[in-house]
Structure formats: C-alpha cells, structure tokens
Image 1 (tube, rainbow, N blue to C red):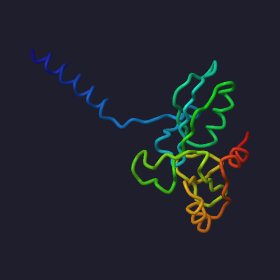
Image 2 (cartoon, one colour):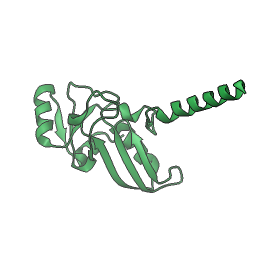
Image 3 (cartoon, one colour):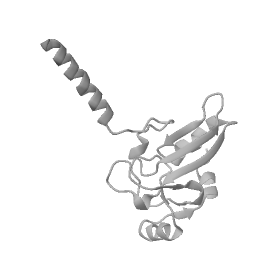
Image 4 (cartoon, one colour):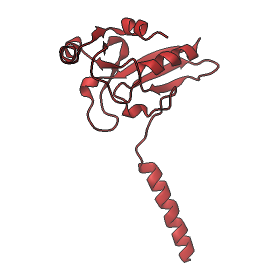
Length: 153
C-alpha cells in the first residue's frame, strides 16, 4: 500500500511539474526559444506546402523568417506579427505583438536586441519611437518592404 502511495505521489508530482512549466516556442528555423527574443515574429500560414503544413509558426528574428519563406515555396502566409521593442520588459515572453507590415525597423544601430540573429534590428509600432531610438543608437529606419529587401538572402 505504501508503494502505491509513493508511485501515485510521484506521478502527480511529474504531471504537475510539466503542466505548470512555462510554455516556450522554438524558432522553427534555428531552434532558439522565440519567446526570449526581443525580435520575435509569428506567422500564420494559411496554405501549406509539401514541407510545411498550415498553422502558426514562431521565429526568433527576421533572418529566420526570410529563410522560412524560401522553404514555404507555394504556400501562403495570412498574417505576420512582430514584437514591439518599446513594450519589451525583463519578463519572459513580454512585449506587444504588432502587424509586421505596419512596423518600423531600426537597422544598423548600436543596440543589439536579445535573442536575435544578424542583421540586428529593433522593431517599433510608431515611426516617432523608432526616431527616438535612432537619435540615441544611430542606424536607419526602414518600412516592411525595405526591410525585406535589406534581409534578402
């Protein structure tokens, strides 16, 4: 009887540990924890391809998203969201997600975001905020179309 109680307690402990652990999303391209990235992107694929099914995918940075788009080939992307750097805090998975096509991208600045790969960039919901960071850290402000050309492999 004592052994059954120990086994039951062990099973409950394991299940509780797994259920209460913070969730994380791996970047599908490089395996980094996308939730830790200050430049996290999420993409909703509405039509998959041979290699990739439809669904939501997370990325640590624009570099990985660009590589993903190359693999998607004939698939279709419905929406792309990106983390607004101005809303990021020290908390895990913090920061508002905004429409990537409406965001402003500060590239070639002196501030390197956490959990990102080159080319490093800071992403903002307003051009005014991007301009404030540009005055402090330097760089260039790009829109969505410009930043896609900037990161083209």
